[in-house]
Image (cartoon, rainbow, N blue to C red; front, side, top):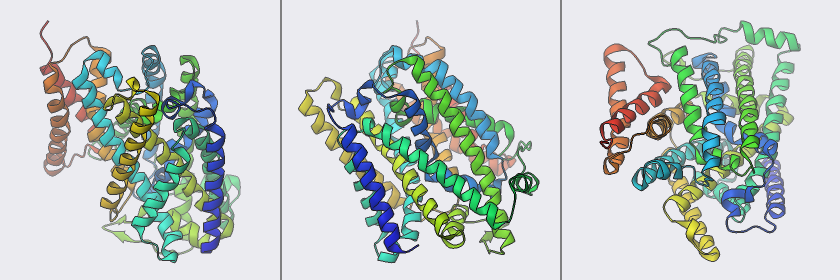
Length: 483
């Protein structure tokens, strides 16, 4: 694609987002940024959450990761379905009963202020790294496809993307994002279908032939029963369950959109519908991964390998799309990357702004004008943190999705432990020890995993979230108040 065509796509897409922002920001109040005026249709939220849940990481990392990990991610997907049921029937009713805007204020109701601040702080750290790493992958693709040809340095590309997101979300925040994410989800699904059709035609396959190719490919293994591997079924299934509860049910960016729905019944429908959409999309991404590797093999495209493993799995899909799939395939892929970038990052920025404003700045009790001032300052700070993290991880290699879930295990594990103790026990805590317990738990998990691999060749994999949560629970029980 020419640089001019890419520029026109970016401008046209951004103008469309700005038009939606203008439409949704009519009659907006200060709280509209945070709660969307509690007027979002549940089906629109569910469809829009596909864009937030997929992101450029899923679009690129899940297919690319098939080369080194077969279809073992499907085991993780099965676990996520059970996790969504927990969110729909356990967490959602609690959030609505307490009329929460920041979901971490539940910890204040259940335990007290110190535990509340601790939980919120762990979310801020977790979400900042997760969102920044998703943004990192998108920026690398956009840099390779467009900005390098204009000799624009990558740090300026990061700033440009953050500025564009700020422009269309600044006024109405989550109220606008609910609508823009639905549009972006549509583009993502379209891109996926175009890519699969393009590869099918390039390999001269019928529909049935395409399914047979996927089913009979050497990478088509679905289940791993070796307990020593990080991709073992039980580790992946349990991790999918717990990571979904933590990264969706205990994640402000995902729940904030759900809480813009007017009632609990519709909110539950939203979560269940979204769980079906996202599981189906991720399964299709796995099939796409096999087709990508089959295409590379059939056309003798050399891929970088080290110690028997592909080294740049995240680069496979962009490489083939930008160089081998023709103009239509390249345009569709590029629109998908732009859509997934905006869809995943705008929600995260709004959630981080909401969480910090409510949990640390007491914005709920401020006058209307003061609320706007606090929101603007916090929003600026969130963008600065995102920029710094992306810069710090710029030279990272491999599948970013693995990095995201690994970090999430350590940072969301304490949050998961806090909520499990809060929901399924009646103990109260000696709160001054809560932050120490939540910090020590992931540190101890990391040490245990290090020696388990060194001595026993046993890798926790994504199960580190379970280990961290269990250690957190043990620490919390040890600091409970006596009756």
